[in-house]
Length: 76
View 1: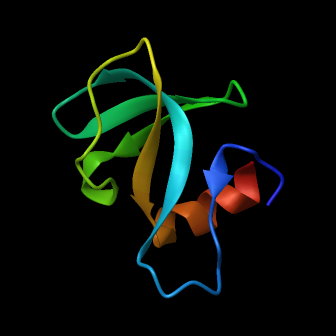
View 2: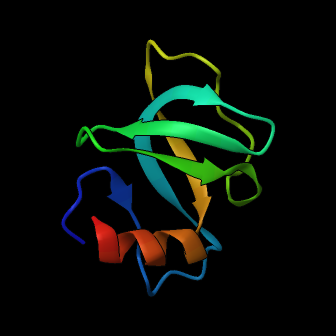
């Protein structure tokens, strides 16, 4: 994977990977993230492990379901 914002090992047995980014906004069902690579996109909350802070002033590691990271790997 080319992105420095995505830590995903397809051979890992963990059900999630890490997105490094900044929380921007959220709706009841999704979160807007800005990756450290400057790309922004919405992610459904159902694919994110809810241990993030709603603070747009700091970069965080977001634990995201590997299914989503596989799809993102084709886009990033």
